[in-house]
Length: 126
Image (cartoon, helix red, strand yellow):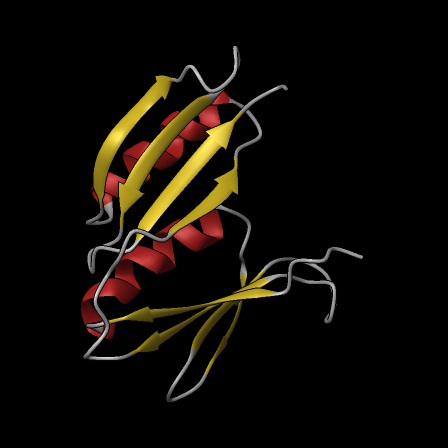
């Protein structure tokens, strides 16, 4: 069983952030949706409890911080593709895509959603 359950993300402006996540999360494999009045949920394939999901909730008082959510990419091309998608969807690239000295094969892009939440997408072989 995958030990990762879910991300419960807060955004300070759901209407501004949702179009970004409607493009990003399906591109990362979170293709099933379960939306309600208070939650926007994007789930990966599989059945609960083993399927990971990403829930987004509006909290007008939320302030982005230095926390970072990281995702794996299957190859460098996916890193480049998602970086372009992030920009087209209204996010901002803060670094990369680039090879980093963390390991000989560490290729990553760092970005923020429209509300300032921070992310990394990385491909590495070791």
